[in-house]
Length: 587
Image (spheres, rainbow, N blue to C red):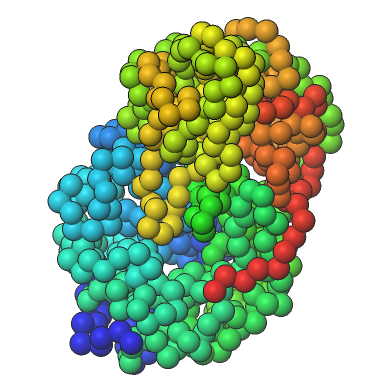
């Protein structure tokens, strides 16, 4: 049970407050009916469309995390332009009649790479999410840029922001009270006067360690309204800031879904109990590029490219049965008729085009200029690389029957000797391989990060080859490093069964599409130079979402880098394929 002696209401200027167990808006009883949309998972030309769909669902609020690493990929270079124009997203929300629950804490989880923490920071600071001076200095510098942009957008100044989250599920991670107090005070010091919140799961110890004086504790769950009511301190409003109406997917598992009936059972129970909520996710969007996170449960569990999450508003904007059920449930809480339901999205005609192999993987990666030479393999962090592929190469004498072992492989590696693939190794699988023959040879190791862990004690772990490469018991020394470019690359070499391939798709008019890669094994896909994400034959996801703004009338170029095996075609589809389903309810 939360200590009620430390709970205080927000300052009187705040649009939202609570009293006697009720959430109040300008002093009157109020229900927050929110849904999560992450601006960083939606193409900015589609922000307004997705926000209007949320409003038509009956929501009065949108909640979004702020992904620190999305804005500050390079230390000290903090971007708020284009896709990163958070202020524009918030203003658009206000324009369509939505208020905003802003979740700007340094850590967001969200199945997003590194839980939102920049890799350059976790590469040098071990004690993340604590009052460690090095961590707080970086957070303070980030807040000095972020929060002055947010303060004018508060309701007190006529903007849409009505609540701001201090930290995210901290009670599941740590117990540094000074850190939480620092975060709260930093937010207030930057002129944030609206309601402060925290968010934690439905266990007493989570709320004990995750709550902080001056912030309303809220809950995250798929089911558990009664438990939340028991945990809520007397007088606090009942708010579920993440009601999990669906779930995300990992590569190699089934596609997780939650039935409309199951979801609405929890929604109705919470509304009947007088609670407020935010649907997580209302619209999931896409882990474009290599922004997907990963979990750890004895093995690495990388998240797929799609973040559809079986949400009421689909990844492509399609409105499903959950949307209409929520619209009916939310409508009675509005004094006026809800906005009209927007038209369905448009899709390109289906077609299949040939995929032409251009450059084999080893030739392709060897065409990248060498970045560093070092006695031992360097990690991604040593090289200043957040994600993607690093190529390690060394020329050495190999005795006959030698066994090559990679110590500390994070995460997956293709191993080549004199340009011939001999094995694919993985951190949770095979880490050694016998090398045929002997003599002086070139060892090439293509290492791919599959996604940075976003939840739990392993947040911030390093990527690449973390210890070394051995032949028997002897280390191999003298490594050249090459970093795969992710924003434009024209390799040279001879075509092969793996590596780089391209296709041309003619489009009469830009519209949404779903892309499939039959025969492909494990690849990354660029559309007109934009990295859509990854496909992987292990499933469950089969198709990648290619939103209309990325297409152009006429000729469109698709490029594929497959590290295992190229297919020979690309299919343009109108309907997604997420794989075999499994009913799953987050607890």
